[in-house]
Amino acid sequence: MSDAAADFLGVLEEEDLEWLVANSKQHEMEPGTVLIRRTEPVESLYLIVDGAFKVTIAVAGERHPEEHHIATLYTGELAGEMSFVDKHAPSATVTAGIKSSVLAVSKSALTDKIHSDSGFGTRFYKGVSVLLAGRLRAAYDVDRRAQGVPEENVELGKLAARFKEIEHRLGLQRVRVQRA
Image 1 (cartoon, rainbow, N blue to C red):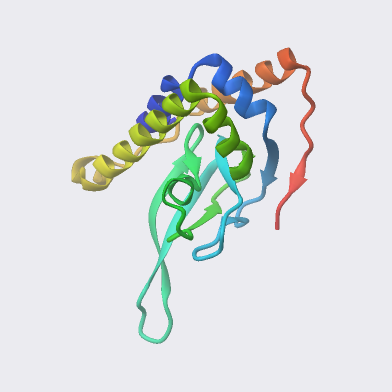
Image 2: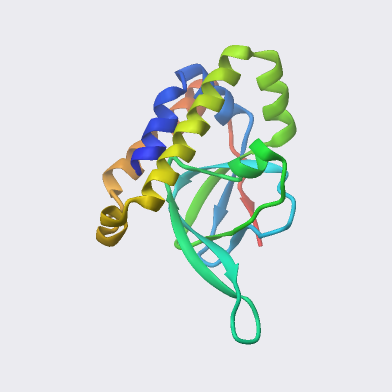
């Protein structure tokens, strides 16, 4: 789990995580499956429960734009948060790099929750701010990028187990959805 992901999740209270789990749908994704496509509207915010996602942007090529890998998102991180915050279409494509799992929370449900629960809204936006600040710092941290950030399988398993425990405690059953 990245530092930014830990900081995002650390800002949220247990009841916030319970709400996110209770109001989401899980999507299991095979490697190469596109979660978010550049310029196409996104109706959900995604919390990565397990796996890794490549973030790519289009850069000018000799004849056609080429996809350039700019980041990898890991367990505990969000995808689609920039479009949620600024209401613009995504500027990047997010693709499963390995078999992965996300929780999808509809933007409308999340917006309603933020408007009806100011404490949740404050913590959520603080968490998103911390996450984005961490990503920005990492983008400028040449040493960290040169070294790479290894995936920590132990942390991945802990987060997945935590979500399953919350679901069990709330008596929820996930609907498994395959996304093309």
